[in-house]
Length: 87
Image (cartoon, rainbow, N blue to C red):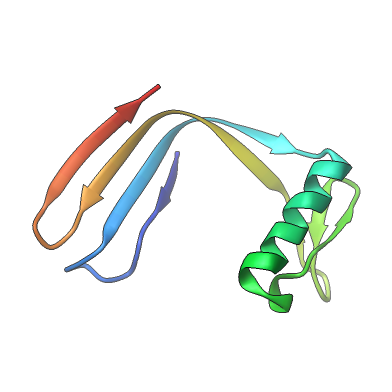
């Protein structure tokens, strides 16, 4: 399960994905994802790809996963709401 959302308790929207996580190790795909991070977030998010992982300045190493989401849940804040998507 993966949960994302903001830190403000009174506003925003939280999303939870429920499914199977699978590690991504393909060099070509990881290189493409690394370039996508730079395009979206800038040079501070530049990764190199080495032995199936992202590498960052210093000793930073990160494994990359994709989630085959089966169900997603959305939770609104402020005026409480809840919804579910399944596919």
